[in-house]
Length: 514
Image (cartoon, rainbow, N blue to C red; front, side, top):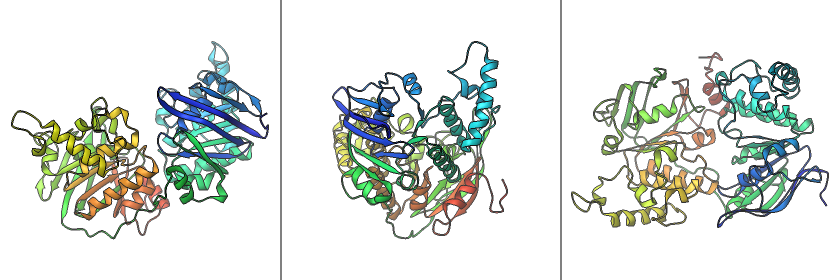
C-alpha cells in the first residue's frame, strides 16, 4: 500500500531504451508540502524518471502513486488531471501570443474564447497575488524577460490546478536576483501546501531550497537524505561515486603581454539589429577574462565575431597584429592559423558533426595540421586515430573508442572531445563558451582543471558562461555584459554575486538602469 502522506511515490520504476537501461528499479517517495531535489550526473536517469511521471514515457515496470492512490499516467493530459504540472528547461510558450492566451492554450472552455479569457484573467490575478507571480496578462511573451516567461510557465501549471510542480533546471537562464525571486515563489508554493520537485545540478541551490534530496547514479537511486543533514561534498560524492573537488584550485594569475585587444567591436544581425554595441577590452597571456551575463546579451556574437563565424566592425589585434573582422582572413580557418582555438557555446551545431566518428571530429577544423597529412593529397587517418586515442586517454573520454559516432557519447563526453581538440592545439588565445553546459559534476571538475592548466601555460582565455559560480571561480577578471555592451569590469576577489547580478540586469553602480 502507498502512504497518503506522500504526494508522489514511485515503486520499482524501470525503463530501457534498447540496450540502455535508463532507470532501474527506482523507488522514491516525496512528502506532501515539501520541496524535493533530484540530482545526478548526465545520463543518471533524472529526466527519464520525470518524463515517466509526466506521461512522456511509459515505464517498462513499476507503479506510480499520487496522494496514496495508484495512478496510471499514459500521457501528459493524465498527469495534468492527476494534479501534476511541469516547467521545462526550454519554455513551451508561443512567443507572439499574450500571457493570457498562453495560459488558456489547450484548456479553453469552448470555441468562443471571450469566456475563457475573462475567466483566466480573474484567476490569473488571484494566482499572481497568492504566489508573488506578478506578470502583465496582456504582455506578449516575446517582450518579457526570461524570468517573467518562467513565471508564465508556473502560472500555466497552477491554472491547470497543479498541486505537484516539477521544475527542470529552472535557474539556468536567470540572473541571481531572478533566481532568488524564483525560490521565494517556490517557498510560497510550499507554504500553500503545494509539492515541488526540483531537478538541478547546482548543489548550492539544493542546499538552499530543498527539504529532502534524492541522488541518482547510472539509472539507480542511491540515496535520499534530509537536506539539513547532508553537505555539498557528500552529495557530490554520492553522485559521482568518488570524492570531488568542488572549489577550483588555482594560483594567482601572472599576466604577461597583451594577446588580444578589441576596440569598438560592433555586430548587426540579419535584421540589421545591433547585437554588439561598441565593446572594448584586452586580455593578457596567462589570464582568464570571464564574461558574465544572462544569455542573449551579446556574448554569443562576441565569441562568434572573434572566432571568425560572423562579420563585425571595429578593430582587433592579436599579439599586436591586425585581426580582420570582415573580408579576407576573417574566417575560422584563418583564426586557427593565427593561434586562436574556439570551443563554441553550442557543441551540437558548431562543435561537432554528430554522425561523424570521434576521430573525424578531433580533426574537425584542423585538417591541414602537418601531423594529419600523409602527403599533399591524402590525410593520414591512422595518425588522426592514434592522436584521438591519446586525447581520449588524457581527457578521460568514455568510452575511449575513436571509431564511435559522436552522437553515441553522452553530453559530457562530447564536450570533452571538443575541449580536448581545441586545448591540445596549445593556442595563444582560447575562446571558450559555456564550457560545462549540460556536463556532470565530475566532468566539470576535469574541464576546469584543463582550463587553468592552459592559463598557467601562458595562454590568454576568453571565457563566456551563464554560470556565475563558474565565472567567479575561474576568472582573473570579470566583464559583465548587458544589451550588447560591457557594463563594467570587476575583480572576482572583491565583487560578489549581487553586484554582478545588478550589472547583468543593466543597473549601474549608481542604482540606475543603463
